[in-house]
Length: 137
Length: 130
Image (cartoon, rainbow over all chains, first blue to last red; front, side, top):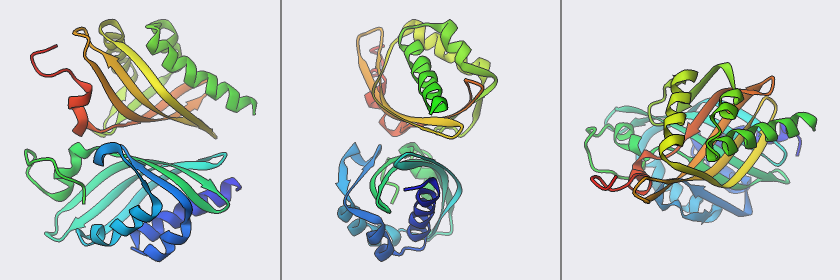
């Protein structure tokens, strides 16, 4: 894939994620896609598992936007730094600062490694700073 | 290709210098205007403050960057690694880190470091044990 194709795939992925188009995401993930997060126990999950969890995850916020995207491409992949803005059902607006390293092959994403700070989850949800740790959902 | 190679060398030189407590080499890796952003406070730390923090850490702790996965891009690199830190009481902490560096003229000018402060119990010794 060329740098331009990788960049386009990366933006297509985040646009679909933002617009909650799970069917589009299913097309973007390669059949053997693996998704790993530095939080949530650090367990690798399949692309299918990741997609299956999305509809429930989407119900947790009124809106999410993937902003301030800084994308750099390398041979076979990309690194994207971005700000995830979310509007909770309470109206609270939160943000998370995230970095993803993605691997690509034949126009599809084969691996995602996502890094974020779970210490910011309470502020993301609008919880009090000393609230118990929970997931970002 | 040559630029990729130089960037890879810079990346290795930087992390090897921290591991080997080679402060002079570490300092030379930073451009004069270098700043370091961390995901826990979203602030840009000035060069001198970051170097002082690293120097202190290199003096007191043994740091190892394992499972290094590096990719170079135009104007920089990204390295994913697991940082293992051996504390004075022999507690070994670990943390998964994503390190994005922007470079110029063979030096690092800007760093973005992402990690999870929600797992500090895996990284720092239990309170009172340090």
